[in-house]
Structures are given as structure tokens and as C-alpha cells.
Length: 406
Image 1 (spheres, rainbow, N blue to C red):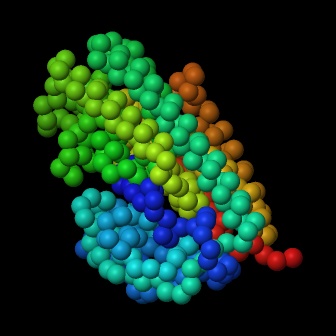
Image 2 (cartoon, rainbow, N blue to C red):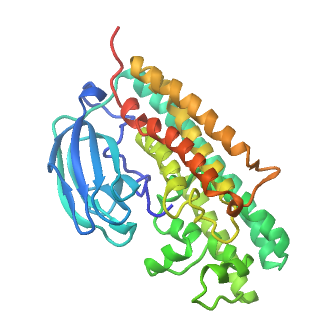
Image 3 (cartoon, rainbow, N blue to C red):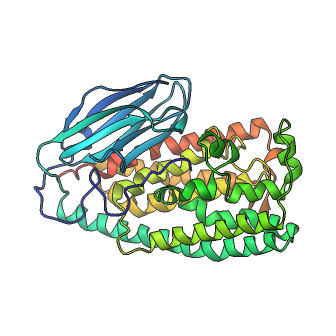
């Protein structure tokens, strides 16, 4: 994950569904959502309008530039992120659907997914505050509670696995450390969008070498240790650089930092003020699949570029997306024929995706090295991933829609 999907996860839910408080019960008709076109270029971010009425709003983002881009909605402080869509390839389009509450915001694009972004502009939501009906509100509260518990459980399981991996690495037991690298990452990959919510934690834990260097950050975390454990592969991947092994002090520093950063993630999601929203869950589901298909992600084989353990991460991202989907599945299914059809398709697509990945291995038996997966096979994986991603991109829009009467 490159940038925080939920920087505002603690104490912020301005554009997401409010699960408490007394506000007018206006209908949220997905079919009549306000649609706002956004064009991202390499040096601009053109938003069709600077205002919208409260309710369901879809930002239809098109990347007209030459670099992969992201689109953000920020709070009135211009810093805190309340919603985003990322990994939009050149020429591609993506929708970001939110439940917009009245207030002042900013919009911004981030071509190249680095730096401060371009085209920052004020955006105003007018009208009355919006809530959902009582039945929807109760179902959403349950979904949030269940998914929040899942995030906390994954973080709790992550801590000892990372400690075991780091202990082997610091002790110089490289064969054991290599065998523990992929398992240590599974719980993190399942909750990547949430992990990206907490400032510099995701860059410290999971940035790849090019990403860290592009943003002027120290290269640390999983992938720095991965590079040290697969030194020959690192030297081959970066032939113009002198790649040398870390000494014992370097190993201890990198390992200790990774353990500390993972513990900080655990503490953050267990903080009493940690809050997720339904929109966080649904947008996070598609964000997890974006992690697979991104140019520096698992499908191209760039995520774990030295160990080639991308398939393990791939499955973990899909599993995380499925858990997020399952949390809101009943809400979507209750949205009339359209919701029922979406749920039926997603149920099938998740089964198909996990079955295809199972042909390459499993967590227990291990997966084949991703550098042995041919381009033709990767194309099949990509096609199946697209077949899942397309309907999943409709989940937020459907869940935030009104329940038909009768």
C-alpha cells in the first residue's frame, strides 16, 4: 500500500455514513446519486463542479496523464483524508462513491502517487445532514463492529509472526527467515488499507525500494529485510548499484524497527478512539484488489521482487477483500434486485478467484515462485481479478443506496 486510505480513521467520518447522532432521515438513492467528473493529468486535477448536495456522490475519475494517479477528498484542514481512490492507470477510469455530509472539503490528485498532489481545490457539500433508515443503521453498525474486530484480530496475529521472522533474521538463521517471510506478511496484507491509515507506518513497514527512494524516505521494513535475505536477486535487479549485505548492527536495527512499527500498528487499531465506517470497509475492499493489480503490485511480480512470494500476498489481499465484502453482504443483498444480483455475482467471483489461486499452492504447502508463472498464466490471473474487481467496485454505491419500498 502506498498512501493512506483511512488517514482519517481515528475520529473522522465526515463523508462516510454516520452511525450515531440525530439527523434527518433523507433517502440515499443510489440510482440518483450526484455524479461528478474528475480529470487527473500529470499537472492538474479538474473537478467538474466545486459543490454538491448532501447525499450519495460519485466522483468519476479519469486519468488523462501519463503516470498512475490517485484522487483524494480531504477534510477542511486540507490534510486529513476522508476518502480516496488509488492506482488509476493512464487512460483508465475509476469511481469513488461516498455519502457526502454538509461541510467544507478539498479535492486533490496525486499523479505518480508521490508528493503533495496537484490541483488542490475547495469543495463544498450543501444541504441537510443525511442518515440511513433505522434498519440500515443497525445493520451497518453490526458490519462496522464485526469488521473492526477482524482488523484487530489480524493485527494481533501479525505481531508474533513478525517477531518470529525478525528473531530468525537477527540470529543469522537465513533459511528459516526466508521460510517465514511470506507467512509473516499474510495478516498485514489482509488489512493493508487500514494499515495505510496511520501516517508513516505503511511506508515504514511495506514500502518497496523504488517507492521509498522516490519519496526521499529511508528504505526499511519487510522489503528491506527481503532484499538482504535474497541478496543475489537484489544485485540482479539493481545492476547499476552496489548491493551489500547488512552487518549485524544493521540487521538488528532493521529488525527491531519492523517489530516496533508493527507493534505501533497493533496499538493504533486497539486504541479506543479507532473508528471505521461502512464506506471505509467497502472502499477498502476494492483497495485491496488494487494492491494486487497496481504496476508495482503482486500481479506484475513487483511487490516481492526478490523473494517472488507474490502469490501468498495475492491470496491475502483477496481474502481481506472478501472479509470486507462479507461484512456488508447482507446490506447489499437487501437493496432490491440490483443488490441481490450484485451479491450473487460477487459470491461466484470470489469462489472463482480463490480456486484459481489454489492451483498455485497454499499457505501450508507454499506457493510456486512467482518468477516461474508465465505471462500467459499471469494474464489468466489478471482476467479473473478484473472479473472480481469490476462488480466489487459497485459495492459502495450499492450499500449506500436506499432500500426499495415494498
